[in-house]
Image (tube, rainbow, N blue to C red; front, side, top):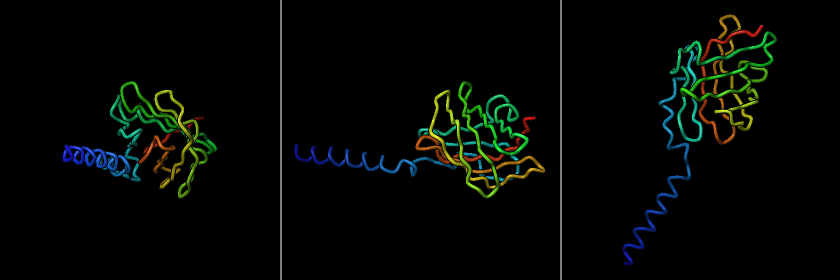
Length: 151
C-alpha cells in the first residue's frame, strides 16, 4: 500500500510539473517559417492549439491584411479553419518597431490587446512581416504577407 501511495504521488507531481511550462510543450516548428518575402503565410498558437492561415479557400482570400492610405492602421482578417478566424488591427505599423494590436478577436470572442514586432514593412512591394502575441491566449504569432490598400 505504501508503494502504491508513493507511485501515485510521484505521478501527480510529474503531471503537475509538465504543466508548469506550457510553451516548452508547443512545437512551433509546425508554424510557417519566418520569412520576409511576401510568402502569404500566417500562423500562431491560440490556447495551446496551432492555427495557420491559407489552408481554406485560397491564400488570396483567407489571409487579408488591409492598410489605410495613411499607414496608420492595418486591418487583419485570417481564416484559420473552415468556420474560424482571427481578426485584429495593427496600429501605426512601422518596420523595426513594436506596434500595438487592438480589436483582437478569435471566433467572435474579444481578446486582450497585444503587440506586433514588424520585421519588414516594404511600401514599394506591399510586404509586411513580423511576430505578434496577445495576452496569454495568442502566442508565437508570425506573418509574412502582401498587403492591400483601403482607398
